[in-house]
Amino acid sequence: MAKRISHKDSMCGVARPLDAIGDWWSLLIIRDAFDGLRRFGEFQKSLGLAKNILSARLRNLVAHGIMETVPASDGGPYQEYVLTRKGQGLFPLLVALRQWGEDFFFEPNEPHVTLVDRATKLPVRRLELRAQDGRMLMAEDTVIVLPPLAAGERE
Amino acid sequence: MAKRISHKDSMCGVARPLDAIGDWWSLLIIRDAFDGLRRFGEFQKSLGLAKNILSARLRNLVAHGIMETVPASDGGPYQEYVLTRKGQGLFPLLVALRQWGEDFFFEPNEPHVTLVDRATKLPVRRLELRAQDGRMLMAEDTVIVLPPLAAGERE
DNA sequence: CTCTTGTGGTTTTAGTTTGCAACCGATATG
DNA sequence: CATATCGGTTGCAAACTAAAACCACAAGAG
Image (tube, rainbow over all chains, first blue to last red; front, side, top):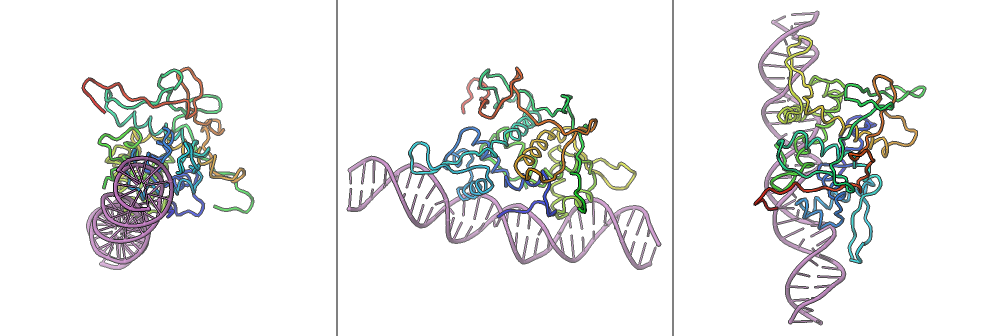
């Protein structure tokens, strides 16, 4: 089931998360989970994907510790799917995706849903990458550095 | 080729970007592009994916305006693939993905590559979502709001 | 008790996608 | 001219996806 994304034995810090999430559907499931959806049927209705696929995706997300099943919530005999702490850690990623979408996939005046501060109802700020000293960083202001190699290790 | 992700006619602000990116491979290509890779062969060597797949992914990224081909750079007879401004807009998403990976996919002392400020060589700060007034926002502090419906429009 | 409906899946099956490998054309290179 | 390298395209078997049918269980309805 797990499709190997990278050929390197030890996948990098980007490929490893991608492998865990699984695919786009999973990300949409996670987004719906952030929106409060919990039940199999809710996800299926919201996303319109085949039930076997949803079943497989949920199973994968649970297997990777991104979601977990809780026995009930309203006494019903069924289980629900909720985000774990690890799953909640994906929130910035979804925000980044959404903001990118707003920037480039909508006409200037095309209406679209907006993420707002629940308290003030104002739109949230943009995600910004900052240095330790608070300077804002663009992509070209950053570098990837290798971990210090322990003795004897070779690339 | 384009696999429809959502059944809804007008895809939401999350699904639309996902559809444009294409798949995980594309995201890894984009990451490599941020790392300075430009040539077909460089991507292929770095990612180890089949050439036909790479070819298709690059074509898709170009078609969606995320990358573009530039005729040369060192006088070679070949073209190179570089990120457009739209593609560069994906930087926060990649950072979010990387930070999530660092948080949950590495043992506490497992070495991994780190994103650092080029100027100071210090690791970058975490991405944080903030309200207009500067408060930090967690997922549960936010809501999605629908656009104001124009007259006559119905859900 | 039996019939029907709704939920939460699994199985079946066909269609699509993937990716290895082989091939191809266009430069260099010897 | 022979050969290699780069940037792909093409063919095809294997893997994966997804629509639909099916199944199990629980709750009501009659």
